[in-house]
Length: 318
Image 1 (cartoon, helix red, strand yellow):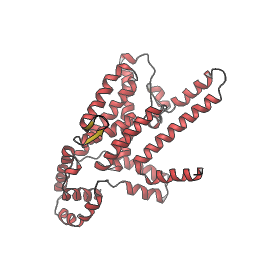
Image 2: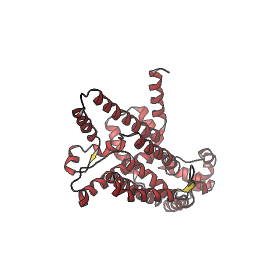
Image 3: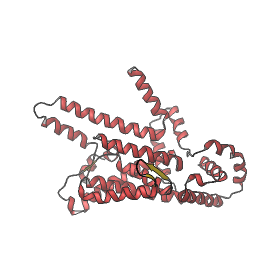
Image 4: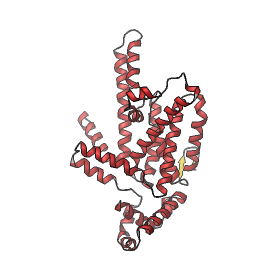
């Protein structure tokens, strides 16, 4: 396969894979770039390469969130870049696996259009937790810290999913099936007890991401969608830079919520539409709240075909 074919294939997968695929591909691309830059500095070094090593660390620090507010103001963009940057293979491997596993469930039960804002906001809140901890707790007084990696953003996806469908079972090799609520609890406890043992800033950032994911899902189950302001700003930026019409069409296709068994839902859509017309605005909100509560307790598969059809039709109106 030629280099051109490989690039075309990657471009095609990026354009058609959805936001979850795009997030993973961006993280992998940044990981390759960071390690390529490191390779260049190593090859260009002489002797022990101390100067080149320092230059590489300076380059990396521009992508990482610093603990000092004054330094952060000078590189404010790092609150976004840090959540896409990884230096070590195992770090990105585990983050992307968790993002794929839980992101797939998130897409099916909450909606693909909400993955990006929850990922971004989880990363931002994680960074704020990190900076707050390093400036409030005396133990970090003489320590310079930097945060890097998608862990906080991924934790937001994990906890949003676990909060939305807590009883959904995930199967693990050698362990068996475990409900998501217990998976989330174990993960958060491991982060808490790991704070004194190293990488305290990273574990604290994880707590921030998890906190946001929990709050988002709790609010979403109560009928409040925190992602709407995000897309209001995002659409404004897109319009400002006058994106191509094909990009706009792609955006429209992603704002619809994704659900399982969509073919079956469409078949009952006509009947559901007539029934749904009789609902007042208050009745619709109460019904959608009841359905979301049912999803949270028993999972999406527990819904009746009528409830699935109602939920699908309701999401199309948004």
